[in-house]
Image (cartoon, one colour):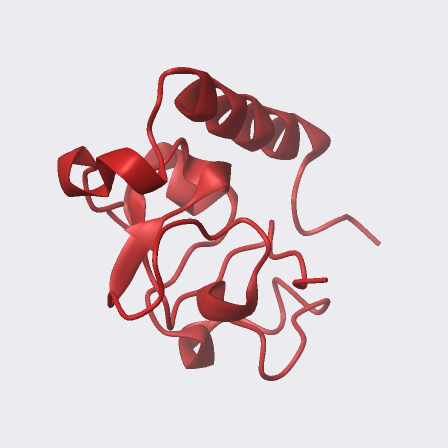
Length: 107
């Protein structure tokens, strides 16, 4: 069975997130961050959708019901905003109701 996310896409996503953190994109610069387009190559590589209910379950069988950006460890910023920075996408803004294959449960 082929994995739903390539190792290369995952490494690229993590590298983008690390670069965004180093460049200061995050909580203090959320107003400067740009909203992630679902057609962006990084978004497509990780299957990002703005509504978790839109996840293609055949393509992403590891999707956990109830998972979304708001309960993901990658999400940054202050609670209460509809769109917040995401470490997986270099600090670009994602919908709190969204989901992608780099979803990591909060600890």
